[in-house]
Structures are given as structure tokens and as C-alpha cells.
Image 1 (cartoon, rainbow, N blue to C red):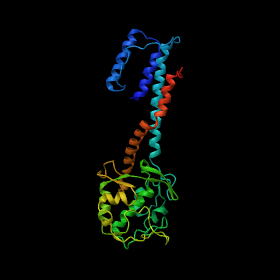
Image 2 (image 1 turned 60 degrees about the horizontal axis):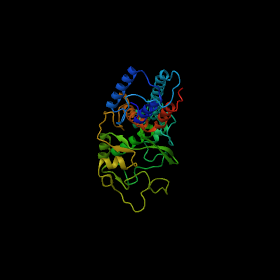
Image 3 (image 1 turned 120 degrees about the horizontal axis):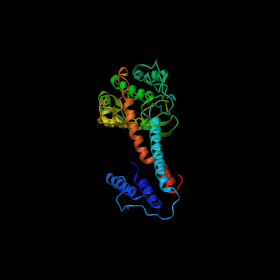
Image 4 (image 1 turned 30 degrees about the vertical axis):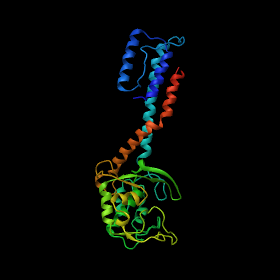
Length: 316
């Protein structure tokens, strides 16, 4: 359905048209009444027939329906193209960051916990191996800044890193950033409830010294160390709830949700690649939602231009 302001522009432009035959006036009046009942045009006085303001060109009454048809087809085409372009830009894409590939593709040699993405990955085999080291050469970041981390806890951080580096399904949540090592990040990715609950449960007895690992470290040694004035304590003391861990540790990379794995509404860090990648469906769902929002907010100028073409007689 066309926005109210376009319908009103078209209706106002009708005032300069020549008077159509009485039977056409009746049919158009009934159609206008139907649009009003559907809420397609705002309330207000609508004349039962157009009032000519100046002499019309010969044949104008016959040409106008074709003009209106052309306009409507143009608007439909604009909407379709914008929706398609938005979906394409958000799906099957790699983040613009230091160790990501330019485009996703198969990687037969992905290591251990990164294997689920081997059919279509944004990470290379080398990167996948480095993600499993206690202090990888990728970022010189150590999980064990407060002593030994429990293996069950460490597995979640490895899986988080594999998702970050390898997944081509995070496009709907990309945000531009201005950092030396990346031009994009993802923000508020809806994480499945089980992934967050398990992460918190398996890490609650391990130790850290910060509630945000995104920045604020002491890098004087070349690797992350606890800042001066901080003390090591259990994860549970820094992250009292699962949501506090999943949303806070990487500065809102993730959003805690009540959606379960397989719902099609949340991203899974853990999945069996033999059954396919469930995050593809999730990305499509949110890409469509974003495209619908972009259609209502981002194509207004195009729609207005098209309406003005008709109003100014540029479709002659």
C-alpha cells in the first residue's frame, strides 16, 4: 500500500484533470471510498468529482490513467530493488576486519571447534588453528590473565572466537567502527539462551579481573594484563547473571535472549554442521526485518521524487 502522502499528492493532482464521464466519476468515487475505509488515505473532505482549474490538453483524460499506472509500476520497482539490495548486502558476508577473508568460501582444513564453518567460512585454516592457542599470535590476548582457566570455560571462548572470525551470517548486526584492526564489528547479536546459560555456568568458577574485556587492559608486556588496582576474582563476581556475561564481556557483541536453539530467531555458537548451519535462517529473518525498516525510512526521497514527477507533469 502506498504511503498517505503519495496518495494525497496523486489525489490533489487530480484537481487539474479534465472532468471524466459521469459513470467514471461514480466508479472512481467508489474506489476512493474503498481506499478510505482501508486507511490508505487520511480522513478529510474528498470531493465526489475533480474540479478543473484550467483547460486541459486534448486527450489528457485518456492519458492520465497510463501516467498513473507508470508511476505505480515505478514505485513498485523501487521498493523491490531496495529490498533485494538490502538483503544481498546483509547475507553471506565477511566482516571488514584484520583476519577475515574478503568473501566467505569453503575451508576444508579448519581446526577443531571451527570445523562447523568449513563449508562456508570467513576464516582461513591458519586463523582457525591460532584461535585455539592460549595466547594466539592474532591479537596476543590471553584468557589466563588470572591463572589457569577451566577447560570447560575455555571451550566457550574458543567457540566465541570461531563464530567471530568464521561466520558469514552476522551481516544484519554489522556496525561501522574506526579501529586500527577492523572497520566493522557486530553489535547486539541475539544469542540463543542455551549458549549463554552454558557459557556462564561453565565459567562461573574461573577467574578474571575485569567485567569488560573489550578495552582497558595493561598492554605494556605486549599481552593483556590486569590493569593496576584490579584484583582477580571469580567470573560470577564480575558477571552475576548469564546476561551480564554474554552482553558485557565483549562490549555488547551479543544480546541475551529467551529464544532457544532451532527457533530461527537466535544465533547459535554451537551447532552440528552435518545438519546444516542454522544461523543462515536466522540471518535471513533479521535481514528481511531490517530491509522492511529500510524501505519505510530510506526510500522516502525516491518515492517523493516519483510522486512529484506526476504532479509536475513530467510523465507526459
